[in-house]
Image (cartoon, rainbow over all chains, first blue to last red; front, side):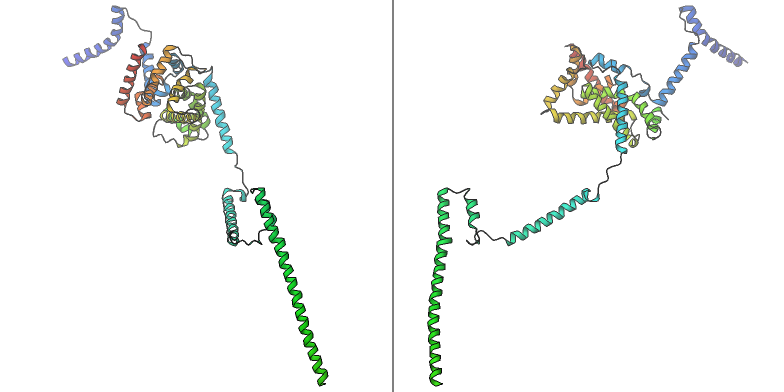
Length: 220
Length: 179
């Protein structure tokens, strides 16, 4: 019974206590609160807890002060309405980028594709190499070149660009001597030999003929 | 599902991607701009890097695997883009690292969008005298207003190390600014 009474009085104290704290402050200290303050405060606290647990503090934080903060401490500024303009320019850049990516890539003719270009280049290289090797094998060394193989006009033309005039004159005289005088002399000698031979040949033939004719007429 | 996870899901959905990206710009554009601006100094450079950063985010959002938070991932992209930009410009304009350091502040002070007084210039010079790590911690905490937990995730450094670095830097700044 006693216990029941004390429970009853506890409940009464708690109820009375809550309503009385505000009342007590108002009566003795003169401090008041707005009407329905605790109801609105409760809602606000619950909302804050809910949003912080679901979104994370970072996203709901006020961000308008960042620019001001930078201006105040670092003196750095931005053009007016920069973030609005920047947003649209970023969105446009992304659209343009997407359009470029959507465009079909140029289809190259098969022989213009890089792999075919490499193959063609390799074939051309091998062909050039084989031609060059063949030519280099058939070429004689300079030492092996006979004087007849060197054309007079080629030599004169090339060397005349590099050699002194006096040397060139000497070379021309020597070549002229070799080419014209010596050869003419050799030809003349050959002609003499021929004439001489023909004379010798004619006499012997004539002798033979005469001998044969004489024998035939005497015997017959 | 948190708001950030919701945003990521929308960004990874082709049908909702563009709307979600516009939302993403609203939330992060200003923060990332200032993060970039403190690295590349001038407004013009920051504008270029900001654009590159968001284009990269748009292109790579499908590869984002939520191993870190979205903002950490975006701050990393912004930092990497800024460094890439500086590297590219360094090759163009400077012969050695000392030229880069002195020129960086000169370029900032001559920027059209810098309007700092002597105290602000002094603060820039003091901050510039710190190591790259100290500078980054101070900027992220004091100006970008990230929590130590977020900075720790971003820089992959323990919170206690970050706190000690930050308070050391703050003390030095307070001392030097009054000199």
